[in-house]
Amino acid sequence: MNLVRPLVSVKRRQLLGAALILLTAVGGSVVAVRARAAGIPSPSPLTYTGYLETPQGEPLNAEVSVSLKLWDDLSEGNAACEMAETKLKPVSGRFQLQLSDDCTSAVSDNQNLFLEPIVDGVSLGRSKLGAVPYAVEAAHASSADSAVKDSPLAAELAQLRADVATLKARLDTPVSAALTAAKNRYDLKETDSTWITGIAPTTLEPGRYWVYNTLRTYKGPSDSATHAGASLSVCTRVGDSVKLANAVVISEAEGAFSLPTAVIDYVDIATKTDDVELGLCAKQLDATLAPTVLAEIRTNVLPLPK
Image (cartoon, rainbow, N blue to C red; front, side):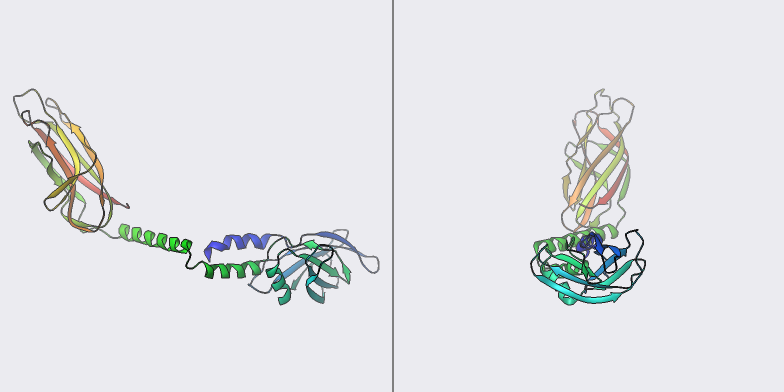
């Protein structure tokens, strides 16, 4: 299971009973032993790796007899398991022993154990196991995987996957019509918000849609020196129903100059909806004054995840 791999990777690199012990063996030779856990290629059994070198620091290559014991106490206690003596010849000082099923079970049941290597019949003393070996950790991960299948965390992960799949499908699915529109001119006289222009009716999936309206506004033909101005908003139209978005832009062009204007807002579509139009609505602020001319109107809609 992906969630436990980083933990397993760390455990594999930790030391198993790390120790540096001097041994005076038969014949007066002196051997130094360093022991640690090897990388374990399969869930079971465990593999013990050792390194033997002379007091001069040279790797030992001569044949030796090695056995192992696991104890539940540093100095006394009871033996949790024992590996029979094995003759082996280190390669550049390194050797491996495959632990018995009894030792694998002992480590699985109790990680507070002490390792005693025995070389040529002489004990090198006990040292505490420094880490849970990979095989034991892998077995634990397998059990944990089965235990959490119906947990709240598993349900939350499943929901997250479903949400990601929904968003991906929404982004990958094209809408049924181009989300752009254009209109050359509209002479605004209405004092109620009026639909001016927008995209053609289309079907929209649930989500958020940003609506960008750009246009130029200027004072219409009139003898009045005063210009009322216009109130502009992004809006949504479904059939005869028109709904304004939140933002409002006031345009008050004067004289013969036109005023560049941008009206931008977003619209949330809660459920799949047919015949939706997104665009620009506007109203004249004072019907007794000069009307506002809206020109070069363009609407662009950008669909985004909600």
